[in-house]
Image (tube, rainbow, N blue to C red; front, side):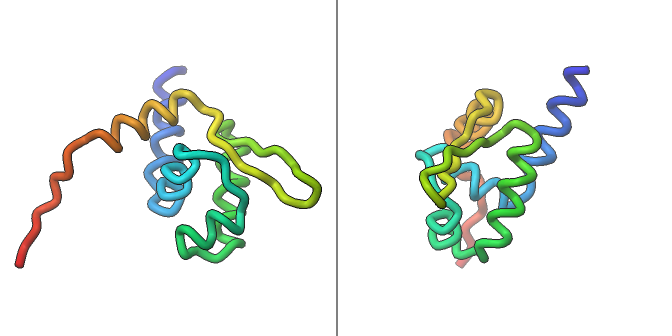
Length: 95
């Protein structure tokens, strides 16, 4: 069921906080505190989103003593994010 796979993947990516986390991970590995500080989100929120994405095979982590370093592991997700990143900004700028 490829359709179900992509529907699930897009639903996960479309959540605004998750999308911010994923765009940050697209640029390189980060731990929860780095993500929380960069994105100005509570660490618990970041942790919950990462746990959900890890259970779906989008991210994974490496443990360095007590610190978990997260990375993007889904090539499909990276391809979607790169496509989104390269789209021209279509927002209307009003004065």
